[in-house]
Length: 331
Image 1 (cartoon, rainbow, N blue to C red):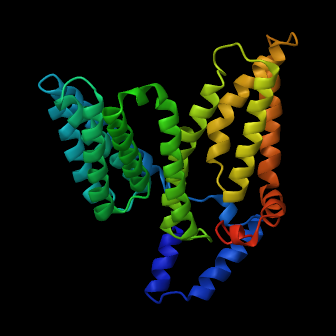
Image 2: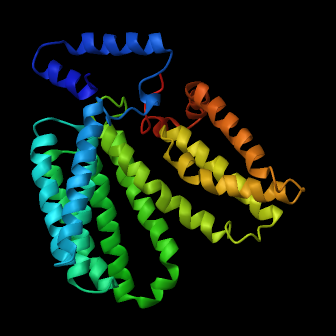
Image 3: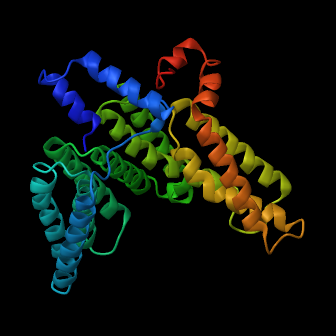
């Protein structure tokens, strides 16, 4: 099993020519009747051994943390982080395993973050601020060593936690606007994601993987504050609110199509399901409302997936030319 990074390395070593690799990709995609950029491809599992190693790493780290937490919770978190780095030295740096790499990155940065928070006692703005800054530095060190694509998203998220905690510490009144601080943080992550995306519009290098995880991080930070502000889970939605929620989802769908990322649609899906379920309840379909909504949404998503490239082509070609150069290529 090989990846696009493997093909690129083969080109760099002179094993293949760049044109032959490009022709190979084009032929493979023609046979699959699809387009590479629209596949939103990223490396996750190359074999069952990835899952086997993941299970072993999880068992080792969880058991180690459980044993040591009785002695010292901060020590337990720190040891988990240290072991995660050590395991990454072999399974990521030597074996190039993607799924264990993702897990070990999360356990490393999470362990560092937890160790700092626990060492300072009860969680507070200052604690989260310090933990966020230390975790961001730890993520940067991990990136320089292992280049795991999700690392940039973890580091950016840690930086957002640091900035939000710093602002709340300086201006306590901002605690009442935490959701909108999350929203602003999500926009920052989204901008960073677009920077990485614009560096690989054909999506054939690891930069595309980095952008994928950044978009996956940005989407809930942007979507949750918007929909939660509308009170979607309080059971008191009006028809106008439900219509607004559907309108926002359609807007997010357009954004997903333009940037060729499905993260925003997935993040907003639960809100749309709840909104449509509540709408059908008002018409006496309380018992089967979720099933009806599931059929409608499921069919719509499958239909959009089947014609994703064609719909995206029609949408992007109507954008200003300057915008078209900043999103994945249309082929």
